[in-house]
Length: 369
Length: 43
Image 1 (cartoon, rainbow over the protein chains, first blue to last red):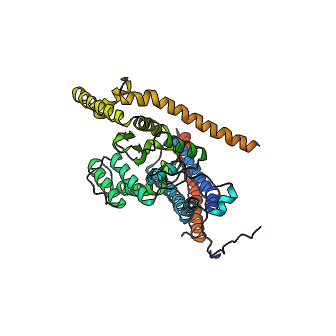
Image 2: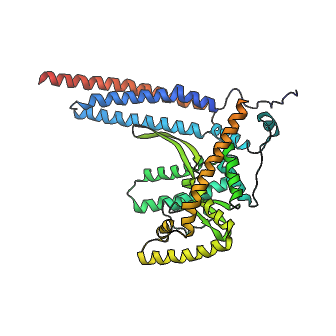
Image 3: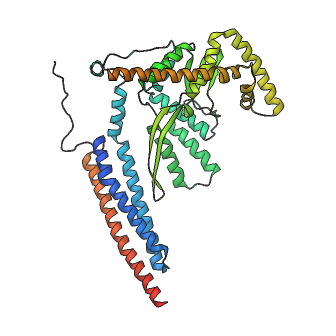
């Protein structure tokens, strides 16, 4: 067996760096006990004040003490956030990202090389691999998606230049809020900070899922290799565009927070723990359209054009949006929407479940042999 | 890059402040309780 090369440590021992492990220790050993102490003190103070008639001097002392406790709690929160956002947290991200670069040694350690699927459209391959935790969103993609999410969430004008920087975009949000809501300067500054902070917590990568990798690629091939794109869509709805066989998935309903625990103390948020996951329902619904199109392109285009006319006429006569009008077609047999969502989607959902189950069973068999 | 030394200093300061605040809260609550007890006796 060849000896493994271990690179020399270049860290200065007199100033050891913060590591993920040391953060965990600090959190358990220092921050949580301090928070507990603070919470106990606050409770003790509130219990004493509850049934007391305070003189103005004592009332002033209580108010001052409450402010002091809040300030300390706020600093605890800040230190916690700073530790998490420190370089060691970035190390964790870069370590996770480097797993995707492809290291031959790692491959031989974990087993035979995994199959690599690809699509003629490189972005589709990249996004499908992102969904299954094998690829990472680039910083440019993160910024584009984040800016889109602010445009939809804060109803910003879509005329903003595409080249606008993230910080300028955050300023646009703050300016808009400033004119519409009664917030003081401190709150507005906090809003900008929190918007900029969203970049750090954006789900750049998901948990790797080999079963999903096999199944999603298999379905992608079966329904005619549609292009895949992500966007933040105002009405929250993913869609299929038959003119270039393209599925646009609404990011916020496709990549979901599977766990989000908010810890609060003295009214301040102590941190949010997100675990991001993939919800297959959007892609399956749009795969239903891709399947229709790939099986009979001309027929699909004809029916789609006919349905679209009906959608517009209905929207006009009922004075509803085009989106609401199209929903009617889910219940009208013979329409593209009815066939896709009421007939094909249940089959695709069933197939997805069966393929996932088959992958799990074969993995279980392989393990127990 | 945050070093362990910088971070330890920040954490130690916070710990000291929290403990200090806790002691002062104890003093303050004792005073409040004393005054409340006195008032009840006088009633």
